[in-house]
Length: 480
Image (cartoon, rainbow, N blue to C red; front, side, top):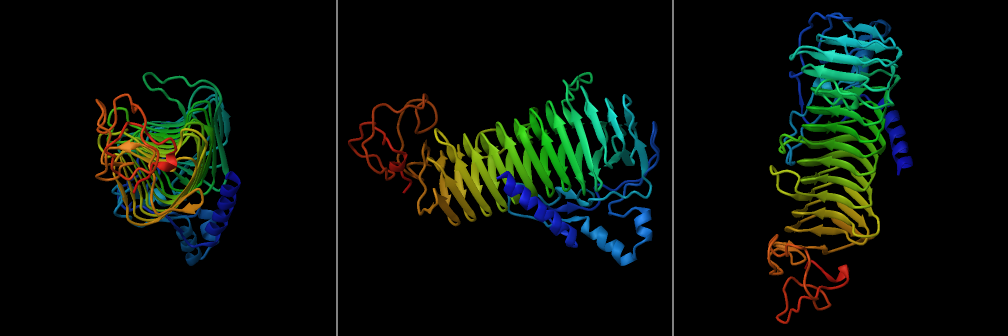
């Protein structure tokens, strides 16, 4: 699968070089990232905060105005407004988020030195260069300051602290030039007072990663951690780590880029311990290859996929309270559940929903489910193909009004569920249920059924001579 993803990545890079613009998704806001230049203390100067991509002064002098405009257009990911999804996505990305080259007209260049931190304390654009060991780029600016860090072939290797540490700002952009930057933490992270700085890029405030180059991150803990919203709209990002590759408290939003995650515990993880109405993941573009030991994608509230190419190898492919696929191509290889809608948040109903796109799930043998919803299962469009012993397991109601379902390579006209569920599951909407004590309606508290149910197809009604014996083969338990 990873070979396939790399082939796709090469094709995308070539297409981007030839095309005038890149299409993405999600609405954009033009004004929320604009700001004025401010003075800088400690190793930096003033910088403007405009929202249009420009070439360097040297390059601009050798170009006609039309050529310059064409290049600027090609370096901006264009966004369109999606609607009808679980999330309101109209203003998820600003124009500056989607612009892949920084305005360098008033930028300050900062060269790294080993054993010395570089502190930026005011708004502006800063080009970071050089190689250093045990050095951290620290952003400690004002609450309203927007800071853009332009990584120009940077190498940072630290033993116990982040390579980039955002202590305070309104928002920080980490933008790559047409180069490769490598950030590594190879020892045990140490806390900064009460702050557990446990990622190579660690931000307490909003963070956007974009650009036209490559960023390689290696970590003994997390790769990228944002305590507010974290966005990725461009560039190539490669992460190896022991915990979460990309994590955020409030949201992870991906519009474009080539993201490769290898051998981390979780791929994408959004969770807010203080507010279970936050912690969502929105993907509307890009190419993601995720190899994770636990969850490929984990969102406390909503995981919404409107586009992009996703290739996931994990114990559990995608997990959230409300998992919705509206577009894109999703390939999952899982050893637990392919897609799991579970009770992670009190703010959303539990559901797995498919309205478009192409989803392929390959399941390992054993007690595994391709799509496991502890609530409802809704299918209105797209294609869902599951290869495994148990394709679907849902506890709520089934609504199937469109789309194509394939199980082990064959198109099906009915969906089998492997579990009982109130008003759904094997009985289907309005079907029968087991009247046991305790627990969820229709299921005993201990999850066990006494005795056995007569062999044969279950048609939504219990026979009068029901003796409690369940069918022994999952294929005999059908949703009619």
